[in-house]
Image 1 (cartoon, one colour):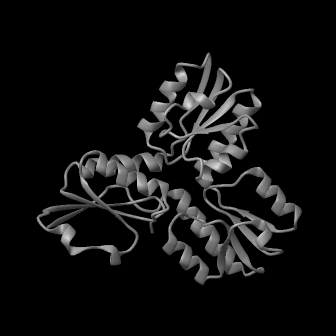
Image 2: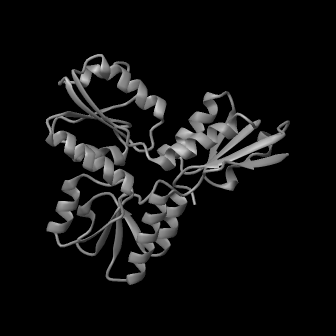
Image 3: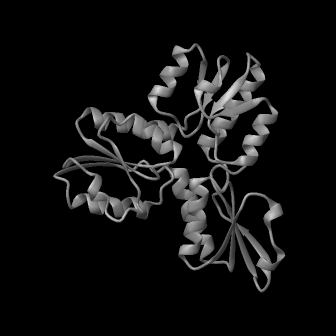
Length: 264
């Protein structure tokens, strides 16, 4: 059996940067070090950080001192303010692409647009962007039956979750065009995400079977698996080699492998 690797796969710039910041912060050794939530959506990488003394927390109320690293997904402004007001040292590892989306959301809200964030409402990146976007901001999931029901303004500004599939973003925009009198759109899907999606799709069309490596809790990795299945390819999303089943490879001649942006 021949094995092919997607041209673009594995750690992206933003994730590499966050990991580097975390290890550097731990090495300095100035008191306990925490991450606000999982630094990245890869359980194995998070475990490696814990071995270095960098522990994830669910809430700032879990700690009283030390350093907290803001995860690559970013956080709402109130989290940053609370940490600083309590004397906790803040190290910001927010991905620059996510930071840009936050800034654009703030700008749109300040200009009177109702900000629409297209993505998954329960994803930490989306929660962070929403926190910058003003009180009228809403999240529209591309899986919603009728996203128009949540729109209260005809002056709409649109932001995408940075790991969203482009066609899903376009689908929601098409719906918003039907109701908006003024529509301002920022395509904030990051280039690393687009490259990984395109190279994965190209590979999937050439092989018999696809293996997608990465955290089961990773949105961008899950979307790679979704893409492979969308072209009718038998696809398995795994986190570790232990999950591999020899039966998967029977009667397969070409195996494709790809990995999400949060996969080492």
